[in-house]
Length: 360
Image 1 (cartoon, helix red, strand yellow):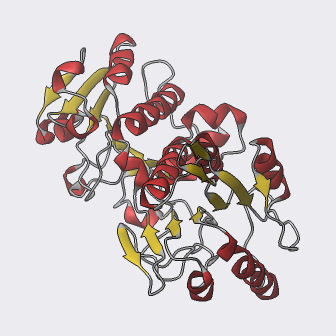
Image 2: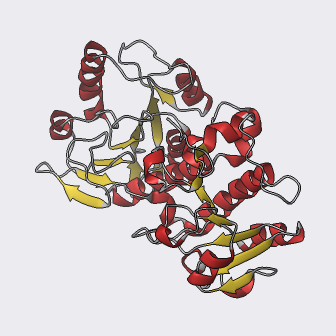
Image 3: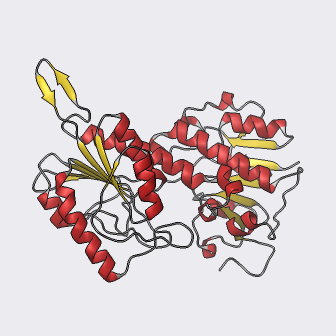
């Protein structure tokens, strides 16, 4: 029997939990022992009593008795973990941070493999973030998103531009459209442009060629390409009431898409939400994670931060389903199997304690 432990998240502002009560019950029914730290699901609105079949214990007991530790982010007290324990979560891509433990990072999951889709936590959480981004932008916008025809007159729909049409961007497009806005999307990838059109949104064409890397992600643009893109976007952005940016390139800082010049040209009351805002910058000039600011010409700039954590119940439920699929893959017959001949396992194995070499 494998013992699976669930820790309360220690990241500031994090409200998700790695395993939902339903997922814990499913693991228990498979014969796994599940230990949940008391209060781990409270911020996701999962009471301890809801974890039927699991043992609700203190944090020290989770560390002491678990073979596998589940988390969303790396625990702040990971030094308490035993070297032989397997840690699974969104652990980044740096094996040097593992401290010699065996770690499975869902950030490394190959998203192009169809049999890995059920494990794809990045996609499930990006979907939540894109949904919430559209709602936050609508809340900050001082007008209506939909066309309204009333006795007091007709109000035109908001013009919304979404930059980046990955999972988060497409969900932001779909949600803004459901709210009644007139939505336009933009992406440098040809396939993503087709995805935008499939939602019923318009596709912004600024005359730049489509670019895609071998793994399906947007590749980094050359200097001339990036300059041409910025010029085109700076001209287009002031036509919109709301701009939501979601563009990210794996392993690199988020590309700058909205310049200070573009912000200065926007109408007062416009809203720009940067889903890619990070400590090392984002898509929008001056955006700061978890911060809302107003420019001198009254444009609201929102650095989104960890939006998935602000929809904790839905995000945790989706993440737990991903975890359940990962555990099914790694524990096929009641024992942990780390088969590096398997392409999924090999890809997500950030570090292995019983091997001299780490992921490079």
